[in-house]
Image (cartoon, rainbow, N blue to C red; front, side, top):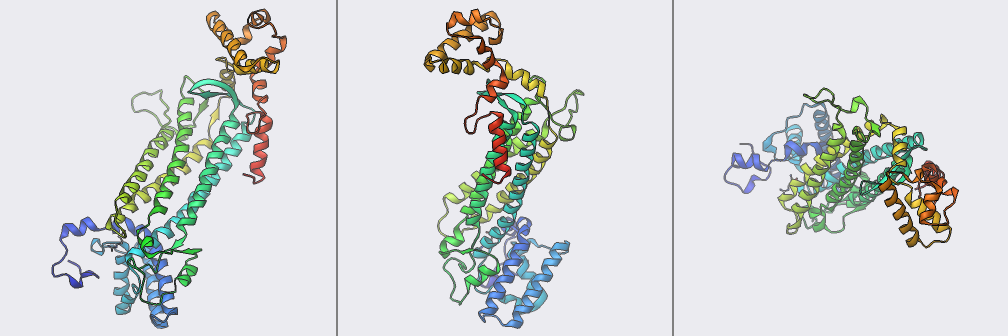
Length: 458
Ligand code: ARG
């Protein structure tokens, strides 16, 4: 049984099972670079405040840098008996530089240290996600430009509703991702708060210069309440919530792709490289990537529930339960970055069946609202015109006809004021391009939005 840095008051060694049970080093070793970065800044601050000497600072910092290189090269051995990453590094430092290494933890507790590590880690990783989201948004704009005039049926209740442009559909996802990006940036403000100096929970008796540590680690803010600093994991929960929304957005897009790639719809073909086959049915080409993104969304939601449940009953301040925040956080990070990457690859190679989409857009009375609006423009109150067109649709259904199959005489049986120009509003192109309200699906409006986006306007 290894000696523990905290075992001064203990007479018996830790039970072997307890050692395994309480250890987190096998997963929190991922925080190693941040733990070392934080420790170097803390040491520099201690030296500046003359709590350790210049010489001690040099020795400790050099030792930490050596350990960092060793970890990077994969030569560092983590022991379960180290318990966590913080103690593994401190143990290695003392082994390397001797007793002076024991000064590193001056004026610090693992309680403020672990919060610092999580914040440094999240700050880096959120930046990576921001880059992935930005890349995906650009791909969507490119795709929207390629499909700027493709007409598709728009659905509500998964029932054909009104024709829209595929580019308009694609840009709807741009808007969602744009909000996700804004949420990530906003959350970053709450991640970017420096907790060191809170120590165990009450602050420190030593003259720590927290502003200096914050400057070294590029934190624009420092925590203002030591008790809050060591018990707060809002920033973790908040990030996982934003990740849940990103996943939900990808999942909904995937759901459409799954439906659209069925033989029944045949709106889109996902490239071979992003589909898989069946082990029994030779004809199958399955949208497994899209399905897995949809499935993994549930996993990220689960992580969010794990975190919120973890936090809800904790008495102030630090409790060891908080160690359980890391696996859901890391899992969320891996899942969301992995999904963003593969999703971006998948949508770049989508082949839309424009003819099919256009053909389907014209079916199912998709321009019925346009006929109702045609009457409104001629002075008929909307509720009345709604009724007239409803009866027209019922008639067509009985006759097994589409609206454009009707003669003008048939139209006039339902309302005298119908003219030949009613056939114009039955054309899907006209239906699309008539919707020129701000944010509408008319090609003119979609192109305007693309221009705004490319001009950097939100
Ligand atoms: N491994 C711990 C965690 O992740 C670090 C803090 C432990 N602090 C303590 N007083 N036991 O939360």
